[in-house]
Length: 201
Ligand code: AP5
Ligand code: MG
Image 1: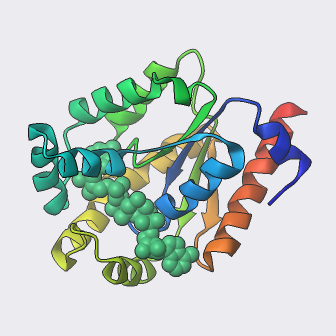
Image 2: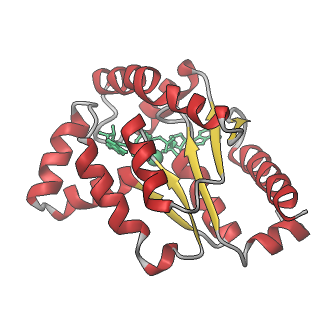
């Protein structure tokens, strides 16, 4: 996964968000992209699970919500991400996974990045039947059939419409998320490299 554009990308600030149904492979691919482009992977789900594992009152409350397949309230998530993006390791770019999930979160993110903005919203597209199989095979604590169903319905109702917000501004890019992890990673890198080349030309 090397190319001149990728090399350039490593020294500049990149502000990306990644969308995709639950189980689409966002976390899996972000780990690779984070290493490839040397940018920080900020996963709100991982942050909440970290707090739950630490047993803080906030973490335990978040765990209850996650186990029900519901969304943690916007004000809580916005506060959390605001703090995280101000940390030093985000100053050279970040890859946001799991945020924004509602229109209020989109607005808050734009406010917090102003006068800059999200550069690219990647939509990792994987059909429902495939993500269902992947999640049941993974078996995370919130991967019960009921919670998965609820999360997928919430994604369609609340999060998928955000893609329109980004596509209306020519910022959204669909990536086929079906295939091996290597194949999907290569598609993502090709798409990001092309975008960066255009930005720099
Ligand atoms: P979050 O952690 O974001 O979970 P999610 O949206 O359900 O997404 P997943 O992490 O399940 O899927 P993924 O796309 O990362 O897939 P993965 O790489 O693991 O959020 C959890 C909860 O936190 C939410 O339900 C909510 O309650 C709360 N929350 C978080 N952010 C919030 C926010 N902003 N606002 C409000 N609430 C918030 O891959 C899945 C599996 O597939 C893995 O086993 C993997 O090994 C496998 N796999 C990956 N790629 C492939 C491939 N190409 N082929 C075959 N298998 C693959
Ligand atoms: Mg994830």
